Length: 331
Image 1 (cartoon, rainbow, N blue to C red):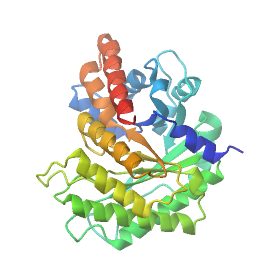
Image 2 (image 1 turned 45 degrees about the vertical axis):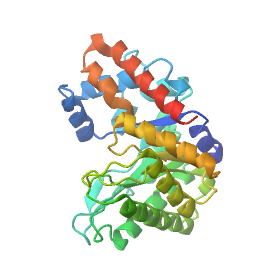
Image 3 (image 1 turned 30 degrees about the horizontal axis):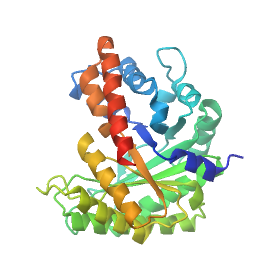
Image 4 (image 1 turned 45 degrees about the horizontal axis):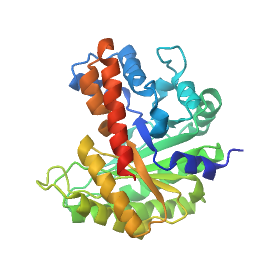
């Protein structure tokens, strides 16, 4: 049986983070279109190859979260992507939730689906593709004092906890991601309140399911003013509020916390991470902190690549350049 704590520790190895490359068909296609690339299954494969086959990514990445389609695809050299990563000592992971449904008790809120048939899917991901960790995302929307509702937070937390229990039973590390969305006109103070409440509810649910906290990772939002609030927070403000929330709500048994970029640009996500890790040292935070970014790591490379083979080397150089900057933010 795999030691889940060891795997979790490997995923938050010093100076390394996790690339989120688990965009669904629709999200991946939308992202490609933004850069003038006509989407298709083959173009999504080439997009993954541009990132995952970049030489030297193991210097910066401990793991990559994949989408199910990518598990079944090969790199340009014919090697399956999951094997390609494992050969470079980068742990392959897999997004196992199946997206969002409307929460019936509260219009405007969502609930994550995917528990049906999860044990069977986990066995296949582990045995056929060698996945070592998984991810499940809930989306928490802020709207004034109306949203989020307590009922939605509790139901999403129960599902995250049930997912985490099943994943540990299957011998893999669950990454639990209750994302408090950046979209909205809310203040940073309101975001702080919601993130803290969300995490308290989550860890209560994990305890009820007897999930081993030493064998999970928390993927969380930074505490930020809403994107429509008209306010840009300083990195120091983000760091102070984010650490205050984590210290108040995350048990010390959790080995690592990884931050999502959640719509932040590459520089903003990097600068905020730098301030957060510096603040964590000041307050002697008990967990390892690192990144699990998607767009903040990808978009500069995508803008150079444009879906054209002749720009692939230049795009990979830009990708490595951003990884270096984000790694430096952890120092």
